[in-house]
Length: 195
Image (cartoon, rainbow, N blue to C red):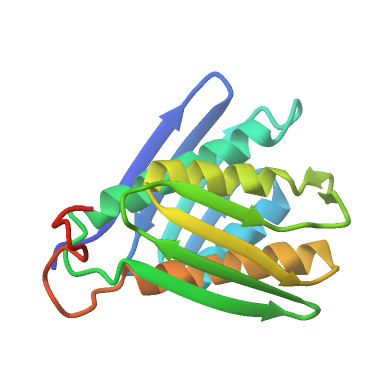
């Protein structure tokens, strides 16, 4: 099998992002972003997906962290798509239910070439360390659109905002690990012959 590594560079007037992704890594991360909670979530994603992930990112967070969070989602989605190539032999589908103390999240994924996000994550506290939690929906929508991936994310239970979002990122990482792994047959996992 080919090496599944990609490098994405994105520079706009609002953000500057360098990202390196290895789908067949060991869960090693080097995340340099100016938002500590986002750093924590990306490290958690890397660990539970077993993907090696390096991100160096800056942005106009003094105005609003929205640009940086969304653009990192764009870059990660592009990197995943690039790594997968023609998608021959991958499982395509992935699913995980992950508990995190009081919280539990379910994530299901189809790497079928059609982007769509269902995000059912209601949170009582609207901010974590002054970071609006609504921006994580923007992150996953950008990722879905750029990875051409169908993602369903659901909070099953939970009150603590940190635990809810962390359960989501862990479940996403684990589900994506399953979906991107080779399932045995060296064929496109679709009756259409293309995804």
